[in-house]
Image (tube, rainbow, N blue to C red):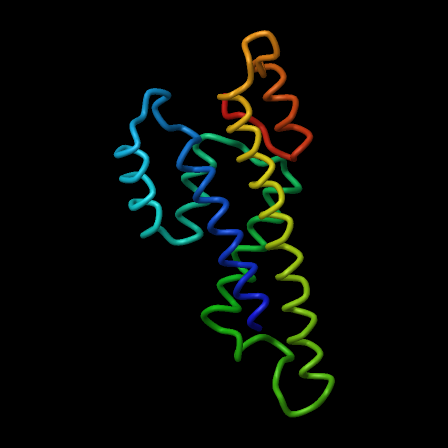
Length: 152
């Protein structure tokens, strides 16, 4: 359970980090970034995902996966003891909870890896020399490989 909580929090952290840059004013100041970070810190995961989707569109399968992750995360955090088929009475019922947590950890890992890749692309896009600049077309191509699309 502790590992699942850590993985969820890490996924939320990298998603919010991406949101600090995605959709931000290109001339944003450090104070502006800090204010944006403080604003994002107060948002729920569901609110954060909706805000993120205003700027980046998930490919259908990834969209479904993120919806499932959000539902699983909420079940874990708010209603784990109500998980259908789970109790601590028998090994089989405990196994239901363990399998649920295993899937949740995998979902959190996927979100984390995709968002870390996006964060790295954003950093590289702003720091590469002009001759090797990551163009919009190249950026969008890389997003597609990550199961994301730019909002049109």
